[in-house]
Length: 328
View 1 (spheres, one colour):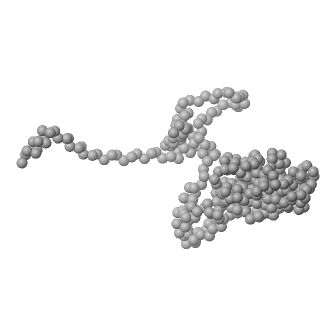
View 2 (tube, helix red, strand yellow):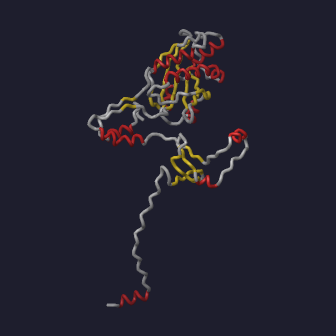
View 3 (cartoon, helix red, strand yellow):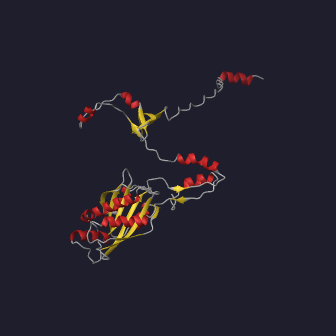
């Protein structure tokens, strides 16, 4: 994906269609204002924190390497869970960590410089509520806005103290980097709050054809739609039972099924509708599904019949060779 956020594969297809394009990457409206309001809401319960926020320009569609390079040298890292492999990261510079610890232990932010130290589990516990409130407020600000292609329902997962762990927890995918410079305790301390958000949605863009090339757009549109992600579930068995039986089920109970269930699996979409049929099998030592002809899958095309080859002449015996050689 390019730095602008426009998918180059779609760009090539649209240009091949011959249309004159006007492209605008769709980004959320008033992102800076949303971040400022989210910080203020998160800081409100902490008496004496007096947080002021100054968002920096976001980095759209960056990489994990970009995220690690943008982190402050002394920081706390909190892994955020968004469902599936959609993990995000919240980073608090030590100045922010110390201010949050101080207002919860002494009631005010101390004017002394932030300590150059490794953060601890105690720091993680005393900053967790602030991070949670900030995420909740930011999600509310972004809800319903166009251009939001990252998960909003992020929750605090775990605390990290080693950047080497990031390579194990975060896949190689595009990330948006949002950074906010915080001033705390009426200027007593300052520090950076950074979010590294995974890009999980499709590119948001507006594309218009030239008035004279509607046919080109109609040709390329099906291939664009074909790139949309589709979630499928493999259903081994469906079983109907009385509600009283369901309520009586306990750990260790057995639900029986026939062997026929294994050769008549349903592949369903998210609504539960069956789109394909399959059989349970094995490939390279792992369980696998073999798709069968039926709804959504045409029968396999039979290979063309082999062309009959003329029979090869039988090999001559030594006597026949001598006779043919002696003939004039």
